[in-house]
Length: 316
Image (cartoon, rainbow, N blue to C red):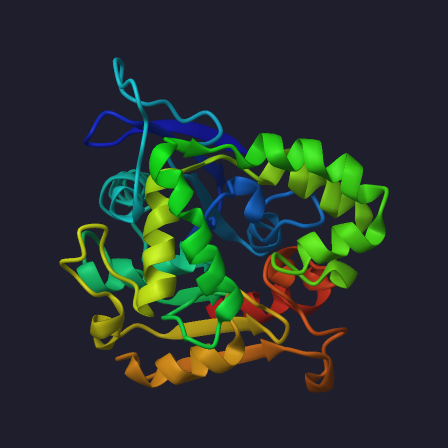
């Protein structure tokens, strides 16, 4: 594995991990997460799985986490969706293509998938051959009442520069782990708790959960309340421009995903401009081991056996 530090146009320095191979694939993690989304350990690593099959796997770690560094003198680091899209990812794609100019694929989980289709819409750089979107909202529905309540509750973060999810997770997990019902209740909104092995849950809280800026949290809350994904300044509506997404799309949803329910995805899929869209819903009555949730789409008990081959088959 190789690791690189690259510069963004506003002075931030972010990280890229690489498992060298032939055909490039860019992995983009979700909100409040990091590169462990796709590379938690040797078994639960879609990146290593595809690398074993010859792919050149690049995992970006966006600003505000891991070894990323803000510009000197920046007193209150804050960032939003467009900082990820138009600064971090433009730098990441440019760097990746300087090392491997072959056509690439984009794989994103949750917000990482949103960044993928928004990249296709805004067109800030070379386009991927295809998009693989795990648990990715194309828009939101008023029926998602729990998310709407969350969207109202997080307004408190207007007073905070960052949300210290990492400390909260590290402190809360040992307490919740003593009470499985409490742990299951907490995990239910992040994953199907019955589909996460205990050691994987510990690794998630210890290594994957990261701090996030109030800027992106509040922007996400705006999407939930408004129903559409739009820019931080509200001047550009991504959901209204889904027809600009023209590359093939593989959308993978979990039947029990409360963040991006399959039924909501189905409402927005017809808006895509892609001629080839495949929507796979991971559910027990569809032949999978269980009804998958959100985070377990890539880290579930049998994800390496059930889910990873779906992606490899799509890319091939």
